[in-house]
Image 1 (cartoon, rainbow, N blue to C red):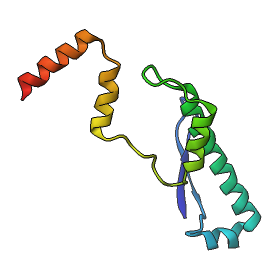
Image 2 (cartoon, rainbow, N blue to C red):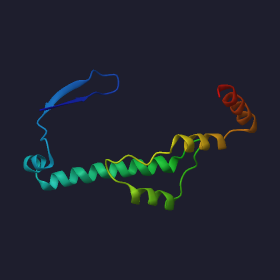
Image 3 (cartoon, rainbow, N blue to C red):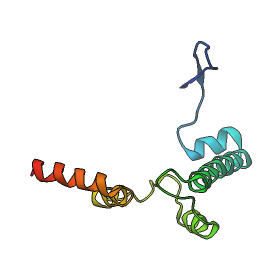
Length: 115
């Protein structure tokens, strides 16, 4: 049995027990191949939609991506595999490029003092 907890905003959480099969073969036996496939497609669709939305919105430091750029990200998407992360140096470079000259000078002063 698998414990599943749910709640509504402001409500008390409720935990129930659900007989969740331990593997794909068990899921197919319990619910049928069509249901397992349908649920997998539903979940993957939600994941891809979330990926697209993240890149459509952009942030204050990263502009929204184009349709072509988003399609490339979707083409590279593999379920269960984390996105390629920037190295710490790449992250710092991105942050520095968005800083004003005064902020860069202050940061350089800080780095020299710390060295």
